[in-house]
Image (cartoon, rainbow, N blue to C red; front, side):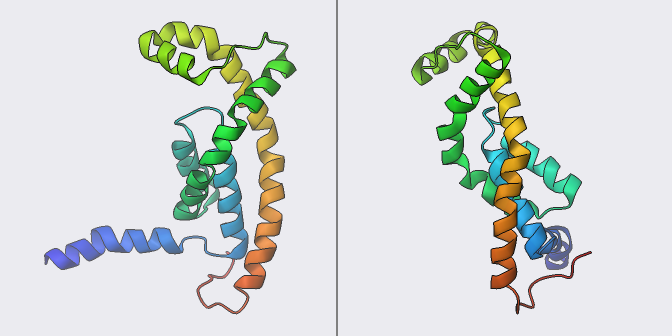
Length: 161
């Protein structure tokens, strides 16, 4: 009885997540979306964003999250450039960005931190948003070609809906 319940309530949904949208096109879209979402200059929002995007576009939840977490180094590298680009686009005075000062300020006075860095962070998020779609397309197209070639003879792939 317990095994049947475990199979029905846990294992079956997990298998469904793992096999959902397993076509070269959908997998490349999931990888591209996850990677681009993982680069957002808003810390802590990429995972929930990836869940929503995967749900809306019927992408593989596992693939999008793997790509999302794989993008973490790119998020760190691109954090300041996205903010600086946003500040430049919106004509804002560049905020002093020192990670230790920012961490201390946010832990001591969150409201003052948001007032001080909020515009720059929002401008950085908008610059990331503008770059997101073209970047996803640049990643998705070659990834689809590689996956199509690699999995051409595989029985694992579902038919495109």
